[in-house]
Amino acid sequence: MISKKQLNAWALASRPKTLAASVAPILLGAGLAYYDGYFHAFIFFCALLCALLLQIAVNLANDLFDAQAGVDTDQRIGPVRATQSGLISVVHMRRALILVSVLAFILGLVLVLNSHWVLMVLGLAALVAVFAYSGGPYPLASHGLGEVTVLVFFGWLAVGGSYFLFTGAINLTVFGYGTVAGLFNAAIMLVNNIRDIPTDKAANKNTLAVKLGAVRARQLYRLLLVVGLILHLVVSIDLGLYSILAIVAVAPLMRSLLLQINIRKGAALNIQLAKTAQLVAVYCMSLAAVLTFMSF
Image 1 (cartoon, rainbow, N blue to C red):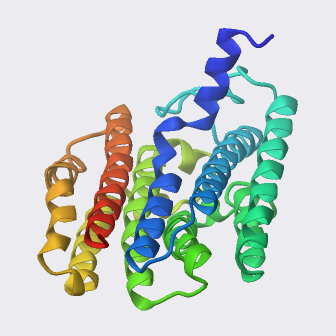
Image 2 (tube, rainbow, N blue to C red):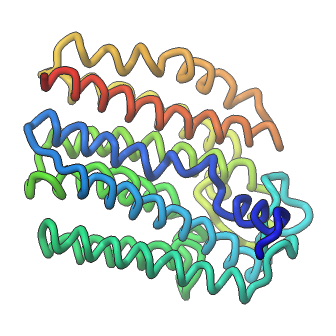
């Protein structure tokens, strides 16, 4: 029987506040497909669950590999890490990572069987990225490639891949919206790395924030949000005034984030991170809702 303490530890390791980063783009991709006249409930729920499992796998891998590499220490100001703090053993974390990855792979196979073989290549790339982000001979996060990886897998692949699941095709509009979602998701990663600059630098983890420094990293954060906003307007020309509804939905949160990124320091950046994840969720869900409404 798993105790409440153990359940809390696993919940902590899964980092629930970040899960919107994977789920929301799938909703957007499905909304775009529905707008174009394609949708299948079974594929939608399988894609949603697969994306969720992949995000959890990334979080578990990051928890495990950063603890083993000495990146996570008692000096970190982010949320407690389960492996480093001893809440979960290395053995149990490794087993959980393998289990979640296998489950994601199985769901990926189901999606491939119901769609197109090319998704096998994309799915395998996503699984490789789970382990390559924090681990392996060339950890992407330690070489300033974390934000680019997020743009690719939580923007282009999440939105474009889910759209492709339903339609078997891709287009510039879908790619554009995938870029917007990817830029907003990359901002989540950037906030995380800005917060961790002191400990990452001490552990020789050269994230993009470490390379840029706190001031320029904060400028880049604002640029990601603003460029995403402008790109949305460009991509949404064909939607007319309805496209403004998604902007209206995120405007108060967007304004707050742009102002607060220069004010919040240290542990307060945990709030900025959670609010940026909320921005991703609100944007993708509101735009998916607008697209669904317009398809009637």
